[in-house]
Image 1: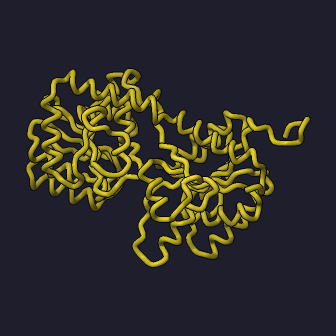
Image 2 (image 1 turned 90 degrees about the horizontal axis):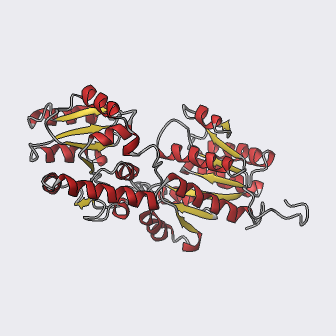
Image 3 (image 1 turned 120 degrees about the vertical axis):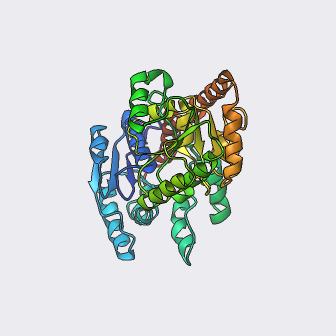
Length: 388
């Protein structure tokens, strides 16, 4: 409030409570910390409610307050109890905006916003499965925000088509990458060499890298099949999880005689160095990605990217300009694209990588995502609590 008018200063940053199931790892969780940091740097107060996890300590080091609540609960009773807890937290903490990032906590957050008079914002992070009756209703909470953040144009169109959401309530705010962290000029050669040695990457072959947790829809099996037709290269599958799938992939690699040339590298702590090790980065998802953060991370590292032609990567990979796109789930098409790109002069591949990094710097940085989200918060905050 200003002393002269008794009204909220239009430039003031509201108090924001972000709500999600837990703070273990992942893109949603990283985005939560990035927005909390931005709110604090803008002079506001940042609260986060979750069931906790390894990212709580980094969050609190930013100056945010974390409140531990059982927000993993999907039971109707659990959702109602959490609504009461969030409403009490919002009232006691003077929360202006409750920002929900996941469906079950979002139902609690919606009820809490109505009780406390706080504004309700959601981020729609995926297309969400509708495999059983009532699931569309359950998913619809993510489209009920006064403002609904869509992380890509693909997701914005999905929200309009599936939920009939008024486009005036939708804000497209792409996920961002930190161009200082993902900067090829800031990665010491020793970091790349250490990964090459640890993973046993053949020194005499170009390297193809697919980053992403092991999951069938992430398309690791598509790249394995493609590699049988790309004998001049080695491939790294970088990502943890999926032990059953890991076993299946290892068996298929052996059956195709690709041992030593297709490597299940596991989790990587140093993704900038891992990406810099690659001559080509592949995105091979067979289901549509809501955005595809690994794509822009690779592009920020000036790596040539070949991506599946569906979902969010259609917006970040411009054919022949910032990368190439191939039909999803088609090993033969992927192999042909890999051979074609590997046959290009090194300078031509480098030019594509440079164009990709320039595009990321201009459109999809963490700073741009933070600024757009803060603008949305200020837009709602100017109205005051309880004002639609």
